[in-house]
Image (tube, rainbow over all chains, first blue to last red; front, side, top):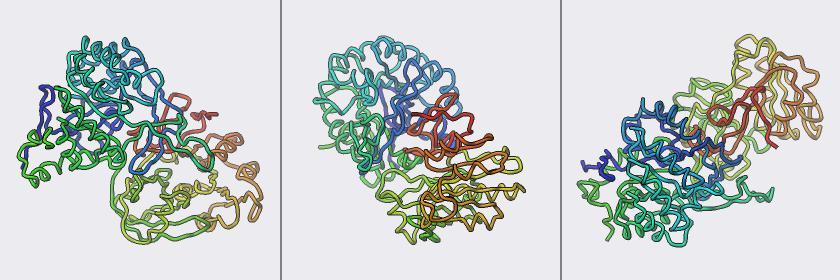
Length: 303
Length: 244
């Protein structure tokens, strides 16, 4: 059987499959469904300095091969995450965690990063500069190379763990943003977050989502994500985590061929809560059938 | 929550736009009234949450209205199997009902009350039911509730059957110790305004996953935010906060 373990910034992962932030809560609820220690890692729900209740409902709309969401970074705040959520996760997950964080100012990013990176369960910091559903935060910092670099620098200063910057596809030139993060000292790049979209209820003539717009995810965005991962991976010298619409083992291989060192699975967890486990189980056999002995061989292997 | 493949045994129209789906599969005997299942339907991305109407020897009965693309597609499936997530949501708390529970259902909110009525009856409770519809052609399950021994009152908005008006019009004269309700939001608000005892409301919201992962269905209640799919869909009267 093919080997599926990978290395991410010097951290060994048993496999490249990571549930994406915002699609797996703080992980422990999925432990009721299966042994989540089979995962490569897991990215927990975006955590901010203060608790956030998020946007009014409806927050969800279905689309062709995907969905829109406008949750609005609902989370209990970093202190509660450290005091309550991480201890619950400690009982069922024994691998380095991806701590996804966000903020509404550079200082907030810094504060959350400095508190969370001290926790021994945390293996990586993933900085969300790409949430499309909050005003004044998230995507604001990921749409401008200068700001993206500043956030990266600030978080790097206070983090003991490798820092990934999670980028938005809602920009004119993804490569320039990724390069700015690399210059700011980022250890890696995660992409893509959701694409901004909208649906209208034709009877009521109102947006389906109360926030008017939401972030598009699901298989519909996979080709866009793949293209951006390919572009970024060819233009930076730091590892890339590829995500956006991955829903099967073949998609993982495709994303890694485009240049991803690991992958995150997002919306697919909503329609099949067992999808990460299934993909991990299918990967070795799929690689065997492709004549691949070690998954690391295929990273960036698209000719 | 469990995932299972269920075989379609029956999928039949029983009233205007209303269908009864019977599914056979393992695990359905552990389900509670007020819980729901989430059905995968091709080619749609998100699953369709439908409340449980009855459970009998690993046969699950669901009654649903064909209103959107998904449920219309479902209504055309006469055989084959379906991928279900079962055992979702908290369900009703039967212990609080005391002797004379009142069940108030409107339209597509009626089916879960049947499963509830059956269990309340088995506990020896004297169950009354108010069923609200828009018009006569939409009426379903009236006889099923009667067969359980419940006192049944039907209302229609256009007066084509039973009491003319809404469930709230029929509530005034009822004698009850506790109530359970499920139906459209305006109906729930009317029930909230008229009820004279404690009780439980079952809510509906657009869901992403149906099992607590996406936070898509979080609503504000008196002590913070709760997920309709996980801490709900049933909420006690005293914890509800109505939003605009």
